[in-house]
Image 1 (tube, rainbow, N blue to C red):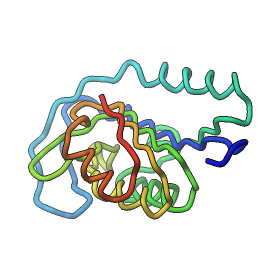
Image 2 (image 1 turned 45 degrees about the horizontal axis):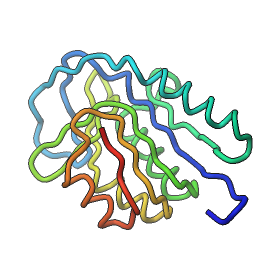
Image 3 (image 1 turned 90 degrees about the vertical axis):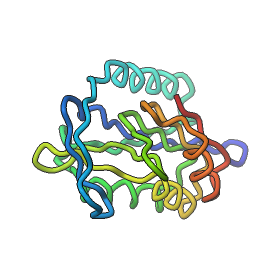
Image 4 (image 1 turned 30 degrees about the horizontal axis):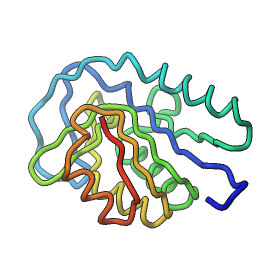
Length: 166
């Protein structure tokens, strides 16, 4: 950002997915085996900490949220479209995802709430493409199995300056 311009962050809380989860893939591919995910205890604290940072320096950090099923009713393909729209057009510097992820085969997938109790897998490749279109430069993944060389390469190949993952 130019001096004096605020840093803009899009925060995605996908912590509502836990328990035994079956998947519906965003690409319509074959069904995947069910997985067990524990509840995420730290996402609410993470959201509070970010709000405190923004409050300490008013106008320097602006945080927008993509809300999942429990707050807006958006799940699956509708939630994916909302994330895409926000990343492509929101003029964000940082996309911060807090939820579960899985690395399988050729890609890392973010786990989103799906329809009828299923989860929705969203490819990190798509996230990278959307970030590039919206000129978003940093991806923060507070997610299990999100930290991999493959994840960094996928997102940075699309034009991001960096990936911070846990």
